[in-house]
Length: 472
Ligand code: SF4
Ligand code: SF4
Image (cartoon, helix red, strand yellow):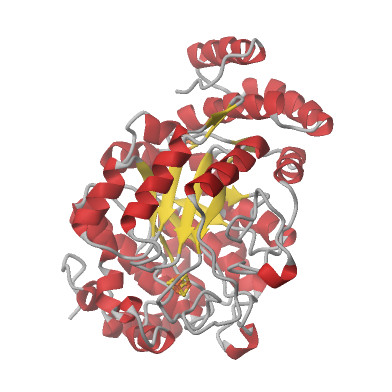
């Protein structure tokens, strides 16, 4: 029985509620007046229910869909402005005892090379990432209590935060590891993690159980209730996502929004981020075996609808997506991207020989961080390496009101300019630096508060003199 406040996965992601919602969306998809009223409501920037969002997703009217896209762009601009935050995934270990059929790290894959970074190798990877200019990481690891116990992950986090190479430092470590206990989430919190990220993969219980035939991840309820335990453990920034393509996209979007509504109803804090990965080719994985593959235009509409349904959430896209798709998604709602990523264990410090392939998926966007930065700048976006909120204690219920009102922009914009300046001074190619300096000059004019503008200008000068790490 559907109950948004229940702590049982089958209640807050109730299958009948999703099916009723999808039926409602099909019945009403020709009701222009109703759809128009939902778009109008979304324009107030207060979000939409899973029912309203599902109806917009089902809408086939070109004109109304055009209105949905324009609104998504408007909301994106209002809340996030034109800064795009960078992060990089860091793969610690691909040992895994689970059997996810869409992932090459599944336990039965005997020909993929298995690897786990030693602390020396973590150090090498961190330095390689710092030398690119990264400040924010997302740690990735398979689930294996023998090879990658929580103690190992905690040790890696400690190592990463301890390394200061030249002007480089990792200022925020987000973590994407298997569902665990409240006690373990507390330990992750104490280790200073930023966001805890866990993709649901699919919200359809039956499908979920088939796609995860063995291993601890088979337990749908334990996995689906993980964010509740993370919140109970004190982690108030959590990141949701599904792997689009495993079930129908309409089912997944509805489940995802119900999950966000549940977190907000129970903890007063919705998801800090939502990721929108799609199934993509990898070792031992043939995408053609997944009949629910999501076409580009539908994927872009999903991005737009999440943007208007959950305006306060950061939205993330990885290098799974091509340059072309990333460009479209940036306009429609994405606020965080990865750049220059390696999806292999140890792939930043050392190029892998093909026979030692440890990659989790094939990247579509293989450009360097510098190339992606310059690309963003040329499109008028501000590449940002900001990690200020977490370090200023603006997390969870201290962050949400600022994101909901759009007031966070007053911090994002100057922080983006100052962290971009650091990047230009320390890591950028001459061409990117030239373009970036011009962008900073121009964007300084767009800081509305005179005091903030003055402090930003002073800090930019200090960065030129060699000082680092300013933030609002
Ligand atoms: Fe293991 Fe995660 Fe891959 Fe599943 S998706 S096989 S849990 S690494
Ligand atoms: Fe993100 Fe906060 Fe920095 Fe804005 S100020 S970019 S929300 S960390």
